[in-house]
Length: 426
View (cartoon, rainbow, N blue to C red):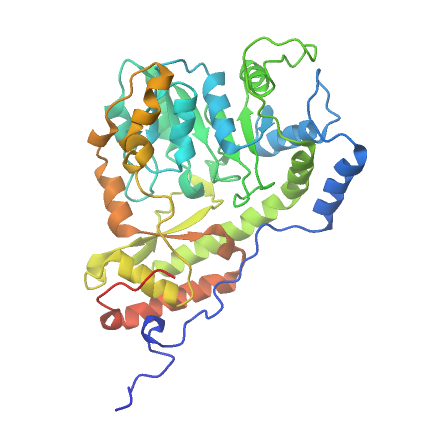
């Protein structure tokens, strides 16, 4: 007997026509003749390295540092070779010493916690807020000890954390605030860009980030001494005012090349427009999802005056989907052509680097806690049952938002047709 369902209404996971047969329209990185011209300018100049022995603002990297600092609302910026390097430098520059504890959310990319270890400090993982997926200030207060020296705030996915509470806690306990802004260039809290709120900010310019040169990073600050410390630790221990072969501390070479500095300057020109488009489309999608049952965007907080994005998070409520597990929902959504997953949302203390630190912990000469005993209930629940993540790139086109909404509506209308068994991941 012929199935009475039409190809249009039948779920794609069951053989029907997908909502987006070619997937969502995306292109990243974005580049044009301006980027080519910038790279050729460096190529033909013969000056490919950004090393300088004085306050030389003729290099592409130095000019980018000035431009980015001004764009972000900071006095200074130091460009480096990765977001991880930026975090390590940020921690060292604010005075983190061996054995100091640094509070960090359990849910973030591995670099946030690894940088703390690389700075010879101890990551202390705390839980996240269920409506924002950001660092929970109450959990921060509960985790404070007499060894706590800093809070690393991660603006995860580009969503600003509650900086009002974080700064209040930091002030009360004389703690430094390091902002991990790797995924949120241009996001604003009360009209101030992230990275210009705490003591120091750290950005990534890896290929997928809102501002990219393939691989790179930026440290932002308003304190001249912090700037000088970052410069020295990134430039083989040199002083910004010193001679080329005079070194003051043992340090790495974290410099950014002239090619990447020039590319970042070209990319910065179009960043405001890209952020605005993603912000508007993100707000539109959140409003439309609010009309549906069982899938919602993160909480809209009026203190967040601009949203840049790295991930667009959907909160899946299985209780409103006939108790269908989240992973089955993701299977069905992907079959409709909507690429979605769980991002890097597994709590970091569940990652092998922390479940079994025996291979590396002894090399640092300090004590680390038994991370196998850490439990952050909200982080684990969200990872196992709730989070659905889309990458930022689809937000550049309103029609992609419509396709996401159409796919979710289609699944809602056919809840009882979602397979009981999981399909193999595409």
